[in-house]
Length: 150
Image (cartoon, rainbow, N blue to C red):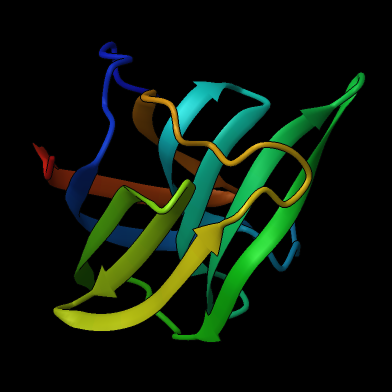
């Protein structure tokens, strides 16, 4: 799910979320709830995994390389999320010195930041959409607010 607005530049995406369950059929480590920023299209975006099956918070860049998109890990930290409990996440994206910087705060705690300095291609510094995706997970969202910071 992505926003209708496609002109979101420097902003904070705030969301309250609950992961109800992970699918037993799909045991992928990256299964979980993800927040998109600078979403240009399905193959060009920054993605923050805020609640993964493997207990990691991860910032990645997805960028098209020819016919196939590729993911570039920009940062990762252990930070398990409790299934069945409500949590808050704030994902901030901002252009800094020609790169895109992403900060992640979960349940009021700063957990990770990373920079897209051009891994795999030009940094994603243009405005885009924001959104959410769940992979092999049942989840709920509430109180979604996108606040410009620029």
